[in-house]
Length: 131
Image (cartoon, rainbow, N blue to C red; front, side, top):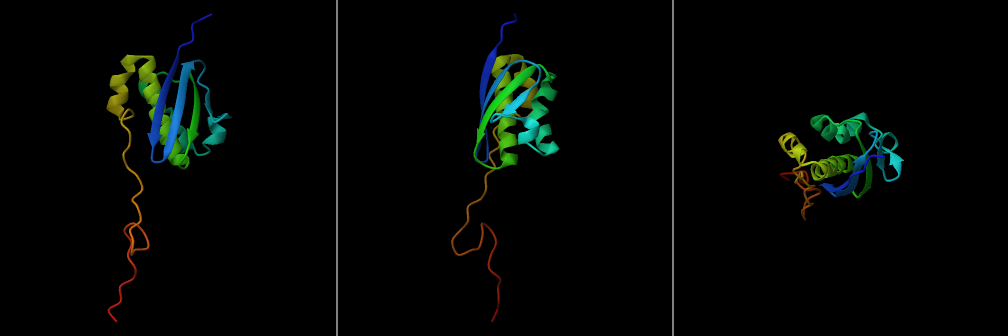
């Protein structure tokens, strides 16, 4: 029996945090106990999650087990991509160059801007009236 190497990576995006475990397998992705097709119902989100495997040409070689909390589905998919990329680098350091070049190892710093007092939103203003 082949030795199974398990690797761990934490990914973050907006308010979402993904704890990702990668091990040798058949390409199965389990998110919070559900298959990725059932959890991430949009094709675009599934494509985001699979991008690190396409860059490293390892599609179908590793199983993913992830626990994700916080945020919405788009933020969770981005956090999962970040966590998978970090776990792949921990598993094999030769993936680092290609993942770094694709920008998957960098945490996306964009966050929702806070609402300011005296305004209805972060940037929106109440309607101006001269009289």
